[in-house]
Length: 137
Image 1 (cartoon, helix red, strand yellow):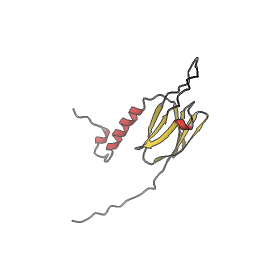
Image 2: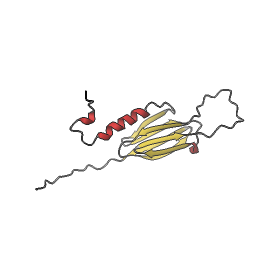
Image 3: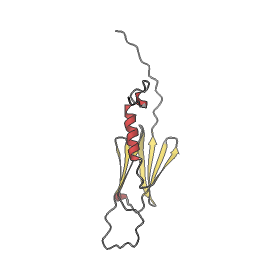
Image 4: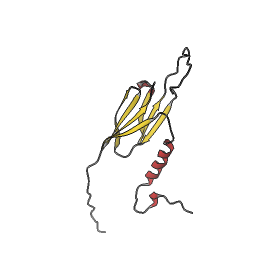
């Protein structure tokens, strides 16, 4: 039996990459730490907020790799002289990824009160009508 995917439809030309994008998104969706929110700030602006209590600016790295926003956090080692009777605040390293659509760019990031805010902006291209000339052989 042949596996039929939505990208195999004859009217969807050039969408082969979409299936790979869906698979990549499914793999990154299982992460649970750190918790996050995604907000629509306006029609073409978004904000991702991650709860990163205990992390400093220097402990966090934000990159865009192949249309994927990647946030990594790694705290410095806890000094040996600290003795915890209870340790409920997670201090583990993390990596959280978000796949970005074409035209979506990171416009800024800030860390305030244990929340990392990453602002995204979508650039909307002007509508273009292209006329194709029919050549003669």
